[in-house]
Length: 440
Image 1: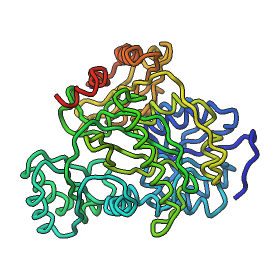
Image 2 (image 1 turned 90 degrees about the horizontal axis):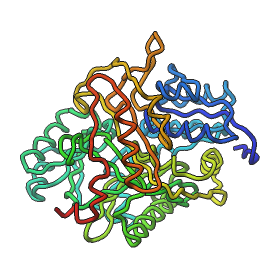
Image 3 (image 1 turned 180 degrees about the vertical axis):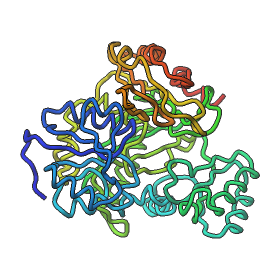
C-alpha cells in the first residue's frame, strides 16, 4: 500500500446514502486534503457537497475497486455494515487502495451476534448472559428457563430490525417463532437469547487500527419512536454528545473495554485486519458498563453529533487508520454540546409514504451552529427536495450548554415542514434530570 505524504490531496469515495454518510462526507469535505468527493449512492444532502454515484453496487468489492481505480480514489470510506460483511474492504485493500473499514472477519463482530458474544466471552468483556440456538424448540425452552424480560436477536444482519425486546414471555416466544419462520430471512436461522440489562444506554465509538483504539466522544441515542421512550424501536430518533450522566469511572471502564476489544482483533483466535470504526453499545448497569452490542462501523445517528465535535482533520485520521499508522492518530474534541433530533416520515418505523416535498431546510441552517444532515431525502425531477426514507433529516445544533444546544435544535426543527412529519419532542430531556430519571 502506498502511504501518502501529509498534505497531499486525495479523491475520496464514501459508500452509503444515509445521515451517517452525509455527516462523514461533510466532515471529510472540511479538509484541505479532500479533492474530489464521491458518495455512493448519496442523497439529497450529499449532492450539495459531493458527486452522488447512484449506480455503484456498494456491496460488490470488484465494482467498488473498479470505480476506485477509474477515478484515482485515494481513500474509500465504508458507511454501512453490509459492504463490510460482504468483504468489500478485503478486495479494495488487497489492491493497495486505503480503505476505512474492517475486513470481513472483523465485520463479523456485527454480522454475527453469536460470533460477537463469543468474542466478548473469550476476552473478558462484560455483557449479558446469553445462549445461541439453531433449533426453535431449544430456543423456546431457554426463554422459559431464563424468564422475562429478555431480548431475542436474529443472529445475522436484519437491517436493524432483528432485535426484539420482550417484556413478557409470550412476546419472547412469538419473537423466536418469527425468527425461525423467516421473518428476518437467513439472519434468523440462528437466534441469540439474552437477559435484559437495565440502566441508561451509552454509545462509545473508537478509531481502531493495528490493535489500538482511539475513543471518540460518548453519545446517547433514543431508540423508541415516541416521547417518553414509548412505542417500537427505531434506528434512532435523536442523540446528543457528550453524555452528562456518565461518571468518570464509567467512562474509564468503557474506554478499557474498547481498548481490550481492539487489542483482541489483532490476536488469535479472532485475528482480524481491523482498520476502521468500532462501535460499542453499552448499558450502564449497577454492576458497571456492559456491552449490548458491537458494530463494525460508525453509529447512526451517533456520528451526526460526534463528528461535528471533532477538532482535527478527518482525512488525516482516516488515512492513518486505513494505512495502519496508529501512531499518527490524534484526537481532540470541542467543549460544545451537540444535540440532534430526527425528523421522520409519518408512520415510521412502520409503513410510510415517500415523495413529500421538504421546505425550510435552508432557513434552519441559517441559524448559528445548526447543521442539517440528510438521512432519507432525494431530489425530484423539478429539483425539489423530497422525502425518500423513514428517517428523513437529522437536525443538529451545537451550544455552549446542553440546554442551549437542545433549544436551538428544536428551534431549527420548527422551521422545517413536510407532510406527516413526526419527531420526538423530548430528546435529551431525561438527561437534564440526572441519573435518577432512569430509576423512576
